[in-house]
Length: 218
Image (cartoon, helix red, strand yellow):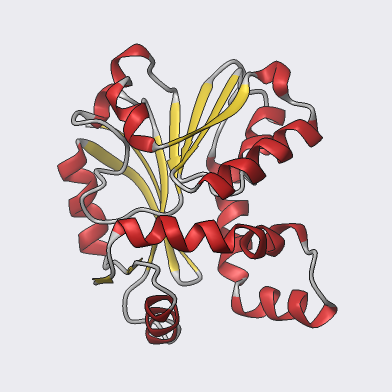
């Protein structure tokens, strides 16, 4: 189930980069932080799940598609990844991610970002990543960039908002009014989208109101 168009998301995240990152940084009022821990608990649980299931990253290359403000990039680098690339189509998010990388001083891990995921897709044959992650997927994205996603990643970690949860209609109305596309998935849809993208699911966990998955090329 979805509403809106992908182009609208770029405009939305241009405006929301600072407030979104504050969910992770905690740079809010006490009330705001408390509300986040209650209403946005899935965001923190999702982060913990991804870090727990990323495996041994020593010397590996990791690509975070839809990296947002880069809150996953630094932990990946500190976990031993030799190269960490964050890709996002919202320039404001890329600026935040670059700032976070500089503040954490992980440039020696070749941690960096790139806007415009389409530009990355056009160069997909030049590099293959050991692990690719995507937190905000949509139907038709094929999970990873490129016409042949199996050429881009040896492993894929991704998360998918569940359909028919109590928060779904609230999120759908709120984000639609703000001009941001929103997507929800059944387990069958998650399985089918992985299959079409050429990936075999190794694990699918129900974390709060999100499906968290690990997959590998079929």
